[in-house]
Length: 222
Image 1 (cartoon, rainbow, N blue to C red):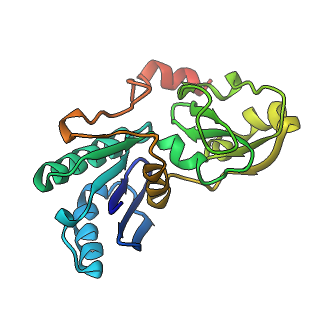
Image 2: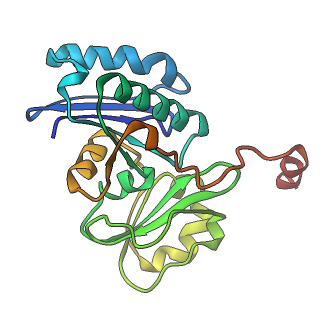
């Protein structure tokens, strides 16, 4: 399948295009410049392959959770491009794109959710999610017995809250893995996610609150 993949869920912009077996990729930290850089970068990748978007079969993107602004930008641009080029969209949860990069053992994915919390989910050895994605305090995460990979930047930001309790069950820890456009293509190929019309595309927020109140900020500093 010929695909464009888009991830804007973190401070990185990750884009990939695969066309008849040839792949081009852009994956860089851009801060909050997703809206500014996404379309020009996409045009550069298309030019490198000498194709137009209408020659693709679908667009896949990270639907969240993640940066509220980032996932809204990614969704809006994916929908606009899909409408204009009569393409379906494959929306994939962000944590799934992290898990698929570390298969071979069961994985616990923890992604920084800001506000002292993490987005988390557990996966089997093939990267298939075992439960729902949730947002919680790191202290609330519990693992069943077994051998697990620990992956995601939650283990960097909340190391002291996670590792003392969980380390006896962890075989490996990789806090560097983050959402990636190539992982989106891998998951789109799996057939586990439906290709839907653009107007049916949904964002997966998990948490609707985007910031602490002034009172909550003061309380967290005590």
